Length: 203
Image 1 (cartoon, rainbow, N blue to C red):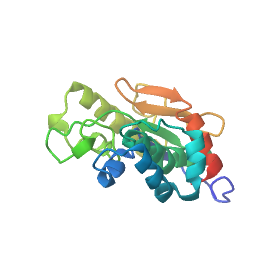
Image 2: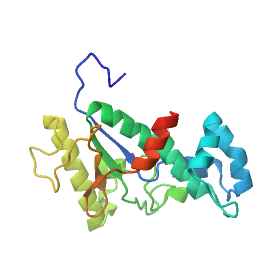
Image 3: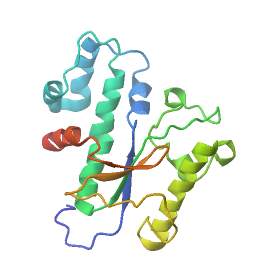
Image 4: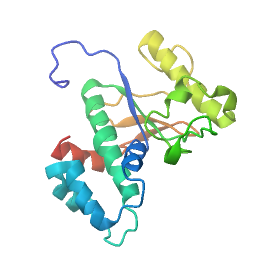
């Protein structure tokens, strides 16, 4: 739909967390997942795509806990790679947020404490825990808020207020992301091979 749109596409910021799938996987599977159990869970989660996943991402049958690997799969298939597909077809500004949120007991984060889980960029964007942030946290928060405020004002996150790095658009010819970590970085081809695979089998 996006690649053949007959309407003008608007400026867009889109992005993903580095550990999007963690809360979902651990929310359903709160104990270690053995490899045999993974073989049973896989078809439930991925349906007819699971045999292709087994071939593309072989794992040791002696792995004690498959949940970390399953987190990666869910992060890629549900979040990161569909986001790349959208961004490529809309020339969006795309980010990856990999800076961990330490909640300091302000909320029950569970297994997401000090991780970059789904939605964990929002306290930085809206400065919700500002008085509890250390200097590094505040740097991430200020930087993110500046990019978003610029975008709201001009449709371009790089101006009018100066930012640490020029944030390029992600296009079909240039997979460049703004990576929120300390320091903020521009990264290229994030999960490229993995997302090429997911694109090929569909979402």
